[in-house]
Length: 207
Ligand code: 5GP
Image 1 (cartoon, rainbow, N blue to C red):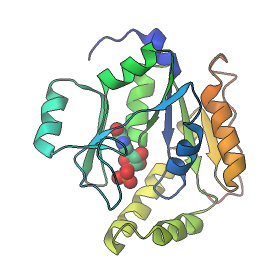
Image 2 (cartoon, rainbow, N blue to C red):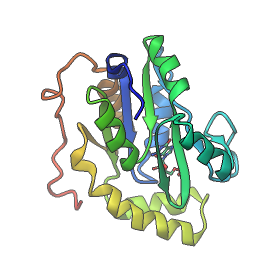
Image 3 (tube, rainbow, N blue to C red):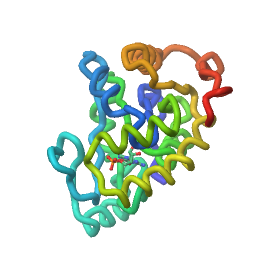
Image 4 (tube, helix red, strand yellow):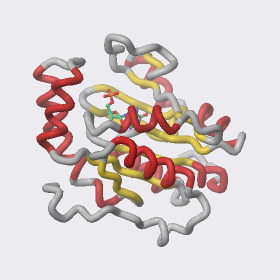
């Protein structure tokens, strides 16, 4: 494992959610804040319609991805829904050194690695109001085939079971409310880890 200066990584903020929970839209809203930047991951997945290389992801082929894994270019990487995703170390440290808060939009496997490497980092899990609403949002999005939707719903159940490991849990029922909460969690960098446990109660949410 590469040795990092963990002090700068206190401004690292991981956000995870099952597909369809609204994580990307929420992050897009808050990243206009001058102190916040969002890391662009690298992936071996093919671009979806409308996705822009270097903006949504940096799209690379599997061979290049594996080479970068070998060269330890990633802070973390994981296989998600049959595709590889990784967070590039250089681009993240560059932003952190500018004293920015850097958001990593990554899955629970990546979140576990980041928390282990950088215990001072914060992580936030975004929940949909219910599994039924999650399915509805995935179908309305119209970007995935039925097979992909079913796989994502199966994975969502595994992902949801990991929510309680996060520092914060945020339920995205009312978008504006969720946006404000996310912003406050992301900016709240001076609290110690115990005080950060502000999880919303999961009782009666069906998860
Ligand atoms: P999608 O293909 O729908 O954009 O993303 C699928 C999943 O991969 C999401 O849960 C997303 O958060 C996760 N993901 C995106 N980038 C990364 C990354 O760099 N590392 C990890 N571990 N997961 C990622």
